[in-house]
Structures are given as C-alpha cells and as structure tokens.
Image (cartoon, rainbow, N blue to C red; front, side, top):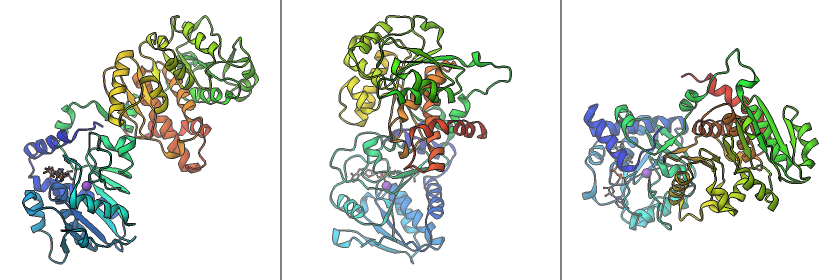
Length: 504
Ligand SMILES: NC(=O)C1=CN([C@@H]2O[C@H](COP(=O)(O)OP(=O)(O)OC[C@H]3O[C@@H](n4cnc5c(N)ncnc54)[C@H](O)[C@@H]3O)[C@@H](O)[C@H]2O)[C@@H](O)CC1
Ligand SMILES: [K+]
C-alpha cells in the first residue's frame, strides 16, 4: 500500500471528486460514515461523544460524524473553534445539517473548555493532514486540555498538530490519541518512532478514493501488506528435494553468546531452508549440535570467537554473519579477509555491523546487494546521528545508494531501505518482540530465505513481515509479556500458514 504525502492526498481527493464524479460534500459524508462505522464497533452507546471541530474539512468530518452518531442514538456534544471566516464550504454545509437537538458550543477561551470524564470519548477533528504550521493560541490550549484529561481520545484522520509527512517541530502541541482512524492510507508520521507515539492504535478506513489515481501516483514510501507478501511467497513443489531450497552458511556465536547463533540457526531452518551449516568457535561445538541437530557444524580455529572462515564459500547460497559474533580484533581481521573473497549473497547483523562501523575499509568493500539489519543504535554507528526520524530516512537512502545494499532498519515499523530509494514499512509485529534475541531470529529467517533464491528485496519484505507475523501469532498464544525470541521460530510455521491460507 502506497503512502501518500499530504499534497498527494489532496490531489487524490480532487481527482476522485472530478473523475468518479462525486461532490466534495458527498466524499466527506463517505469519510464520516466510515469513521462512524468504526466508532460504533468500538464504543457502547453509554459513552458520550465530545466532538471538537476545527474550521477546515477535518472539522467538517467531525460535524458529519456528530450527525451520524446522533442518528445512531449516541449522546453527542459539539464544540467549535476558530474564526467563522476560516470555515470551509463543506464545514459550513455540515454545520447547517446538524440537528438542533445536538448541543453546540463555541470555544473562545480556556474558560469555555468542558470538563471531560473518563467515560467520555473525545473526537479530535481540529485539524487534518493539511496542517501548515504548529498549533497556537486557542488551538494549542485546547489540545493541552484534551491531553490533560482522562477521556478516550480518537483522532480523525491524524492527531491534530501532527505534520503528516515532515518533522513536527519539537515543543509543538499535538493531540495524544488513543486511536487514530485514518482515511484510505496511513500517514508517514504514523510509522516513525517520534511522531508515531501520538497516534495510538491506528486504523485505516477506505473512503473510495479513485483506484486509478492511487495506482499511478509515484511514492517512495509503502506499507507492506499481507496481499503483497502472498504474491511473493513461492509454494513448495512436490518433486523438490533439500537441494532445491539452498544451502546457507551462518557464522556467529562467541563465548557467552552462543545462544544468538543457535537462535539464528533454528530460524533459518524454519524459514524453509534446505541445508544449513553453522560455523561456531570451538567452545560452541556441543552447544550447537545439541541445540540444533538439523544443522551441520564447522568449527573455528579459535576457542572463543570468530577468526577463520571456510575456503569454499562459493558453494553456499547465502552467508549470514553476525549473531553473537563478538568484536575481537581477530574477528575484525577475519572479516577483512572474508571481504576479499568472492562471496555468496550476504546478510550482516549485530557485531558484524559493529565491525563494519569500526572499520570503514570493510564498508567500502561491502558486496552489492548485501542485506544489513541494524537497530537504530547500530545504524547510527554506521552513518552518524540523525536530527530526526525524517533525516534518518534521508541517511538511510544515501547509505543504501552509496553501498548498493538493502538496510532493514529495525523498529516498531521496521523500515527496509533500498539502493533505488524506496522505503518499505512493515505492518506486523508487536511490543512483545522488544526482547533479547529477536534480531538473531530475523537474521536467521533472512539467511534462510535468501539461500532459497529470493532476491535481496523479496527476502527483506518476506523475512521482516513473517518475523513480525510470527510475533503476532506468538503474542495471541503466549501474550506479549512472556514472549521470548525462540517463540518467533516456533510460530514461524503458523505465520507461513496464515499467509498461504489468505485468499488472493
Ligand atoms: N474532500 C476532501 O478534501 C476530503 C477531506 N477530508 C478531511 O479533510 C481534511 C483536510 O481538510 P483541510 O484541507 O480543510 O485541512 P484541515 O482541516 O487540516 O485544515 C487546514 C486549514 O487550516 C489552516 N491551518 C493549517 N495549519 C494551521 C494552524 N496551525 N493554525 C490554524 N490554521 C491552520 C490551513 O490554512 C487550512 O486552510 C482531511 O484530513 C480529512 O479529515 C475528508 O473529509 C475526505 C474528503
Ligand atoms: K484530527
């Protein structure tokens, strides 16, 4: 699913109005109807709705929703803000359509703000995606008031005060929503850590924007959905054998961190890999053979960490390196030598990335189409600090282009950066996955998929999505709090099943 800028969203509205055709007012009605359907599914009629409307079309949505909720027997109170001369045409029409029985108040100063009980549902319809500057005056005071109460806040389209596709200046007043109901597409701000915290749980509701427009509009940003993953995943054919599904080599583990290598190994196998060889230091031999009997073992010359690599690297279909590797000087030298050899497709994680960051020569020799999987701190070691989340995306783009690599930047919505400048945000996963070892599992999944012949991009899209989906299935069964990394490979099979069983 493409993610549009605020300007493109405006164009999509205008195109739909002209081409469908539909009046702007009817399109607003469609948006408000979709919003109210969602509200009805989530809130009982005992909960009173306090609807705060700004003067633009976001406020117009709020007014239309007020009327529709009233028709559905909810208690509704409407609060208007902003000067009358700023009111949009559709706002004015919806104000005229508002039934007289609905109580309305004009908010001129903070003394007019209503008290909000815990029972109340606040509908934030102050400003939508076309905010041009931070909120000030009465708007900022009202947002502070809404944020200080204990009512449940639902933002219409986007939390008011948040910029959809550029950094919101620090210190701005922004509505802190529990839920955001967004029209047709999520906004880029929802997917980034700093702005995403205002959005709460978000839900996209379709409002029938013209598919022709959505298909042709160019956007570097996309949300990876189940539909896309279903198209990418290849079925397992009847006459296949283990050689069909590739042979991967994993290099990882050091004294005290052997578990990282075994987690990655289990995950690579569960990703459907044909054959797996794992190289561990001597101290890891029996650990590996006991924990992962399906894997073949290669033993490093060193007792405790990575120092050598096999000479026949070309026979592997993918090399995954990094989980639990350690950062010994000998390991850095071994990485340097490794990079001087012809290599199979690479997946680099954890300490392999830290070694790259410490030795820029290594980075210069990074083979094209490598997959790197840093968390934000590891990424910062590679590229330096980012001023904000949007700047981090620019850094991601430059890094991927310069090194012709794919970067899986891990987070709540993991972002995959590509050499050609696209950004793919993941839509699966949950907070239970913020626990040790889940990154090692991801490295294993990516290594296992890449060795099966998926392209670097396909590997990243599939691997990140399935890793998150396994986490979601695990959370359904075990709860988020008790989720541990090994649950992710235990539920990976169920995640594959969910994708395969999804209707095309
Ligand atoms: N036909 C349409 O265009 C549709 C619009 N929809 C709704 O309309 C919203 C966008 O509506 P608008 O374009 O009217 O935008 P907003 O409702 O976000 O209001 C923006 C207006 O406020 C002004 N403004 C921007 N920042 C301000 C600030 N900090 N302080 C004071 N004024 C400020 C701008 O000059 C602009 O006129 C969407 O988010 C969505 O909720 C939906 O009803 C779907 C259909
Ligand atoms: K809003």
